[in-house]
Length: 141
Image 1 (tube, one colour):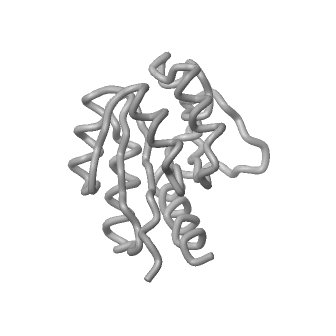
Image 2 (cartoon, rainbow, N blue to C red):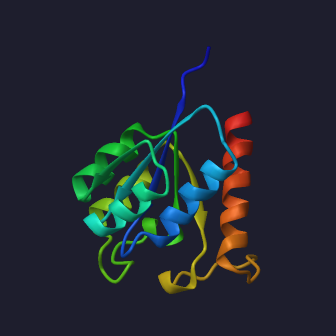
Image 3 (cartoon, rainbow, N blue to C red):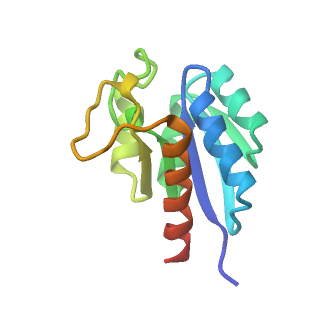
């Protein structure tokens, strides 16, 4: 039997996007994963944990460590950009996400000030639906 894949969801500020990702993963009953949330601050972590994560951690060191051990990383696209989330995402955090060997499933969010050509406008719930679909496809590979 194959070991569970470690899915790390990263968020900051109030953790609303991360919580929505976790809730959607749980609603879809995605199996074969350990779902870990890591917040840039305690409020974000607590909010994501309420969504149904298996485990949680907070802060720069936790993000760096868990990115090294993740199979899949999910979050807003800003998690790869130092200074995003109103400065909460440090250069070390962004580097850890970017340099991780994990598959990254990133959700474009206008607040991150990263514009991506070829990505159509759409409401956040639809983008989260698509991210969870990509998670399922990645797990099936």
